[in-house]
Length: 292
Length: 144
Image 1 (cartoon, rainbow over the protein chains, first blue to last red):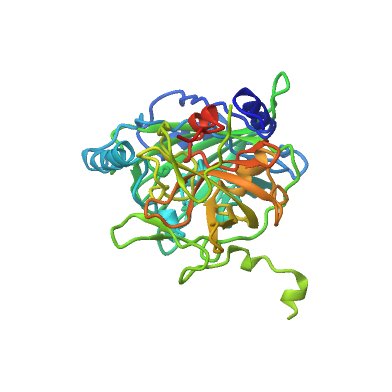
Image 2: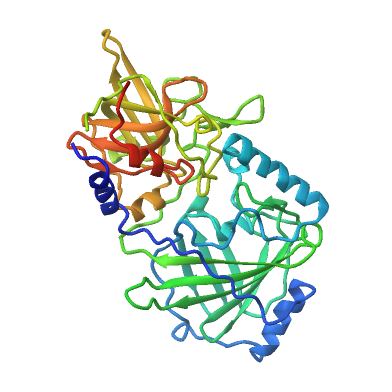
C-alpha cells in the first residue's frame, strides 16, 4: 500500500497531459464604444483583410483542448457590471460562499453553452477553415460557430440564437470575428450573466509552443453589453494541441445526463435503479444491438 | 501507516472547499460543505465513459448478504483524456475503493475525489468541482 508522497507520485503519472496556465488577456489597442467600432477599426487596420486561398490559410487542424485555468475568468469577476447584473452575480457568489456550489446551472436541463460561454467550455475544439467560412466547432453538444469571412454583413434572420451570427476576416494568420444576435445566458457557471444585447469581437491565432510547450490556439475577446456591462470586458482563452488521438462523436445531453432540478430549485442526480434513470451508454450501441 | 477501509460507511474528515470550475452542472448535491468523505470499496459494475460527465458504478457487499450499487460522478471525457484516463481505465469486475464527496440526501452515490486500486495506485477521474488535494494528503485515512 502506498500513501502520502507515494500516492501523489502515482497521481502525477495521470496528470502528465494537464496544462495549467491561465490565459493572458491582451487588451485591444484602445477603448471602443461598441463591437462594431472595434471590428471596423481592426478591419481598416488590416486594409480590408487578407484574401486567403485554401492553400494559404493557417493550419488549425487537429483536436484542441482547454485546460484548467486556460481561460482568464476569475472570481470575483473583473467585469464592470450594471447594478442589475451585479446583484444577480452577487447571489451566485453567495451560493458559492455559503453552500460551496451554485444551486443550479442552466446546462443541467441541457441548454447549449451558447455565446459567450462557448469560448470557455472545457470540451474539445476543432476548426475547419475555408476562404469563405471558418467553422469553430465544439465537442459540447456539437455546437458549431460559423464565421462568414466572405464579406457578407450580419443577418440574424428571425431573431437571436444561442451562438448568434458571426462575421469575420483574416489578417494574415489571425482571424478577427464579430458576433451579435445572442440569447441571454452567462459567461460560465458561477460567473455573471450576459444580455441579448451582448456583442463580441474576437481575435484568434495559432501560437507555436516554446521550449517544449504545446502549440495553442489563442483567442482574445472583448465583450460589449450595454445592458449588463458599464465597460467593455476583455477575456482570453487558450486551446492546446491534444497529444492523444480522439475523434469527436455526436452527443447530446438529453440521453446522457441524469442531472435534474429539484422542486427547491437545486440540482441532483437520478441514480441507476431509480425511476426515470437514463442509461447514458444507451446511445452507444454495438452493431448487433443496432441490427436487433 | 495503518490503512482501514471504511466499507459502506462514512468517514468524516476536513476538506478544503473550492469553487466549482469546470463541471457541466452544479455539484450542490454532494456534501462538500461539511467536509464529509466516503471511502467505498466495491467491484466495478460499469464505467460510463461518456459526456457530459463520466460515472463509475461499483457493487458493494454490505456484509449481510445484500449488495448495493454505488454511483460516483467523474469529470468530462475531454478532461480525463488529458490525464491519460480512458474508457479502459476501469474494468468490470475489478475491485476498487472510491473516495468521494457523498450525496447530501444519503443515497448511495457521490462525487469522486479519487480512486484507489488494489495495489494502492491512485487514479483521479474527479471533476475540478470536487477538489481532492486535502484528501490526497491525508490518504490513507485512519479510522478511530
